[in-house]
Length: 100
Image 1 (cartoon, rainbow, N blue to C red):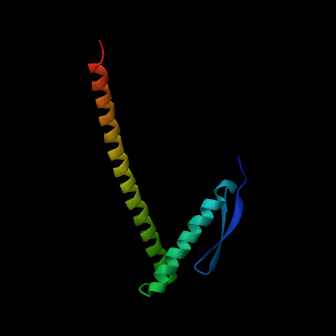
Image 2 (image 1 turned 30 degrees about the horizontal axis):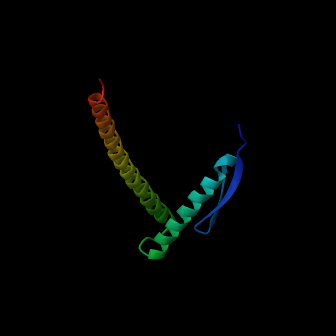
Image 3 (image 1 turned 60 degrees about the vertical axis):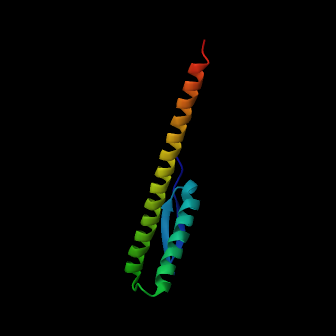
């Protein structure tokens, strides 16, 4: 079991110290960069004022993107599974025709 380490993250001009396993450091830093970029985009749009509101809007945007991507992935997997099932069925039929 690995020992947690403390990582310093910079999000919207503030510093946050977060504990995480060493093997997750890169993912945590990438997530923080994505959050920082999303929050900066929202702040720079001028439509949302206040760090708390910007954070909530960023969370909603990121959650929406994740759920939309998840649904698209599920749809793709369903389509692939149907295609695989069709191919298996066709193979079964072809093999049945060629058996003595």
